[in-house]
Length: 137
Ligand SMILES: [Fe+2]
Image 1: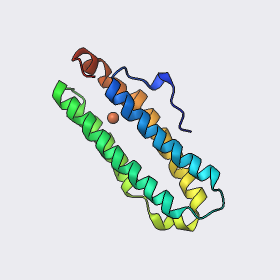
Image 2: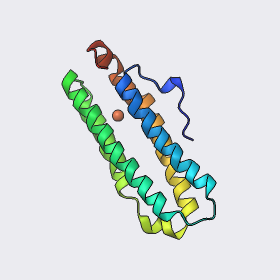
Image 3: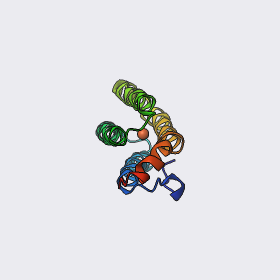
Image 4: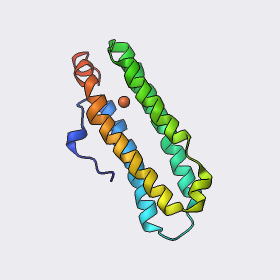
């Protein structure tokens, strides 16, 4: 689910590093679920999801500030996509996690991995040339 390959690399080192970190955080969650099947891992799950949400917010702010800096034209649409994803993460009901931890967490992870990779390839890729041309590293 969370396997980084070079096709996701945008050639902007700071962005690639942050994307890799997000993917690694997703992978950690995936491994936690796989290695503790049937166990109560509620506290770890909640802590890791909160950390992922925090890091996502940080990363989106970073990207948005660079898009502003280079005068990227599609900024508003890109920001809207970021807001929608953060809203999804914020809408996570931790009571639902407690009802059926494994199913809920697996569905959640699938949503997160699909969103992240689709967003990198389909949306982040649009600023790639402007960032590289402006010497953003
Ligand atoms: Fe983005």
